[in-house]
Amino acid sequence: MNLLDLALVVMTLSLIPCLYRIAFGPTIADRVVGLDALTLVIVVILGAYSYVQESSFFLDAALVMAIIGFIGTIAIARYLEEGEIF
Amino acid sequence: MKQYIAYALILGLVWSFVSGDISVLNFVIGSILGLLIVRSLEKLYRPDKDMTFRSITEHLPKLVVYFAVLLIEITKASVQMARIILSPRMDIRPGIVAVPIRATKDASITAIANTISLTPGTLTVDVSDDLTKLYVHAIDVSEPEALRHSIRDKLEKYVLEAFE
Amino acid sequence: MLSTVIEVASNIFFLIGILFVFVGMVGLLRLPDVYNRLHATTKIATLGAFGVMIAITVKTGFSTMGLKAIMVGIFLILTAPVAAHIIARAAHRSGTKLWTGSVADEYAEDCAAKKDELNCDPDKKL
Image (cartoon, one colour):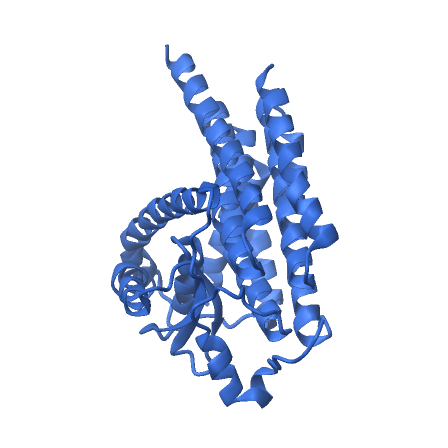
């Protein structure tokens, strides 16, 4: 079992709580937290790929993913709070 | 004018990091693009009128100390939270506490709020309308006074030195 | 010799990062309410992601990859508290209750004093 396999197995296991929260979270805020955590796990998976294969292409995707996750979280939270985004 | 150049230089540094090539030419290209962005998106933020290059260079060592303290606190926070999460019966007493703060500038209030969120067992929920209190959610509020005391004396000192 | 040290150090950073992300997600599953779950994802999982990015930088030095990785890590550390703050505030204002074992809620008391401005009706259902 090499490093990439280990990392992917652990990260796949950590996706389960996020998906559980998104599906069964008692409130909408729980679902937002789950989505935020899901983005973070995907960023870490992309980081693990680029760490093992030593290519920087995945890191561009990771940066874009982090930015989109942040903006999406803020948009949903603002909608939840005020009923409108802008 | 000075603050535009300072912001543009910061954006130039970010450009060099994101494009993955630190050279003088790349930094200059990034700074010119940064100047365009800073000038054209001026309406979206409030430029700091008091900022001078002298104040930046004076604050730089304190900023370094602040980031070192922040990194140590984040590591401590994570180990403490990991212990709470992995303990079999979860012994937590959460709650929201109002913490008075001394900072007045927007930048330092933001820095304090973010620092509180990243340090052991505390999370900023909101700031009061008159900017004098932070509402902090804490994992363990059996002693609210001790919590207020630790935030005021341990964290706010470094932030005030670095940002005001 | 030096390359071995770098290899071992970066692998240690990488494994610690992966472990912290996993522990954070376990916290997301186990902790009782939204605010406590935010504690887990904001602190532990962010530090884990930062650890993975630091591992990339340690392994490749200040190359194209290392610089991009450190940028991703700094971005995550800067945005995680902001996202946590805005989710917590939105949850509180939209009426999500604290866990029943909570000790104090001074925010709700101050909200009740000026209900019109802050729009935090505790009876509002989602």
